[in-house]
Structures are given as structure tokens and as C-alpha cells.
Length: 286
Image (cartoon, rainbow, N blue to C red; front, side, top):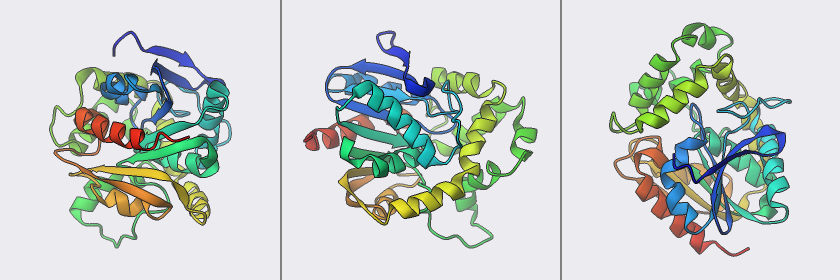
């Protein structure tokens, strides 16, 4: 990562990578990643925007949340950290994977502060389609972690000391090309999630999935009216992201990113940056 980006701590100890100048853009990565997941689009964003890439509470180098991992609580913690920094400035919000889980309730609770929302390849709690068991092999490969990570104790028993093996298999499974992630990104994730308790903190987001789902279904009774961009990797959720997001937002655009699996900002940074910049510019209104 280029040294010109500043690493700092916001309110509640939230770790942030900050750079660029202009209207603020908030970037939220998923699990098992850190704020560095967006680093391949930092340069493009920084020419037009000031970006804040955040480690969510309990992930990367941010401390665990005090009151639970449900995404209404986590998003409120992160929003308070950003509002403390930006004061009254409105901002754009972008979330990938678990970052997408967080960004929806964030937008639902603080819509008046947000210019636009972008959700990248994220199965937002509360809006997955119903599944019949046994799952097809394709569905099981895509969603196995939702069941496994939510189990009590067993994920820790099976993964402790084998974080590298798990994450190697995980990223290879969910990228189109085996070199889909940069080596320095991968090593950063290994470093972050091999520390004592780090995997458990990630699992807690999945253990809170049912609670987060119930919260989101309540929020969705008042659909978002801000512009929302929904993007999925063509070999992952794809254009199905549009249909998912239409469950809770009225003004939705988006589609699929070609030659891409789950990790959009890393597998196809140029295509993703172009789509985001086009969308952000079109919604630079507040």
C-alpha cells in the first residue's frame, strides 16, 4: 500500500486508512479482510474524493464492539466514528461482503447524512432467498460459511492454528483466478486473522446473522430513497444483487462485473473503480 495514505484511529478506536481530497467516501470491507481490501482503488478515488477505508469493529485492527455484533449496533458505532470526524458533512457509503451487511442498516438509520449507497456482492441479512435442503453443490460452495461460522465453538476448534490453510482455500474458492488476490493483501489478512481471538470475532458476525436479519426486515418497512448501486461478481451473486437490494431500496441500479468472483475491488479494481466513480459523480448532489 502506498505510504501517502494515512492510517489513523477514529472514535471508538475504529481503524481508518484515509487519503485524497474532496467529498467524503466511506469504504467498508468484509470478512476475512481488512481496509486494505480497497487499496487498489484508492488512487482512482483519491483524485476526486476523500476516502475513509475502515476496519469494522472486531475485524482487522478495530476493537470488538461492546454491545454485540448485530449490524444495527456495529453500523451505529461506525457511523458515530465518521460523524465525529466529518461533523455535518454528508458522504457516500460503500460496503463489500460483511461491509455490505453493515452499510445497509447504517444507511437505514442515518439516511439524511448519506448521498448514495453502494453494496458490492453481499448477502445482506434478511434478504436471502429461501433454500431447500439438501443444498445444491453450487449453492453449498457459495454459502457454506453462513452455517459453519455460526456454529458455537466448532469453528474455533477446527481453525485455530490453521488460519492460513482456511483462508487459502476460501480465497481460491471465491475468486475466478487463483491469483485473484495480491500476495501482500493475502499476507495482511493472514497476519490480522492469525492473532488470538481474531477468527472468533469474525465468526460472531455470522452468529448474529439472525438478529441482524430481524433488524433489517424492520428497517425495510421504510425503503431507502437514496440512490443505491448494487454490483456483483459475474461468477458470484452477479446481477442478482439488484434484485436483493430492491427488497429495501427504491432507486437501484447496478449489475455484474465480468470475469470476477466475490472479491470485486481486488479481482477487478479498474472496472469497479470506473463503475463507482460514474455512480458517485451522478449522485454528487447534497
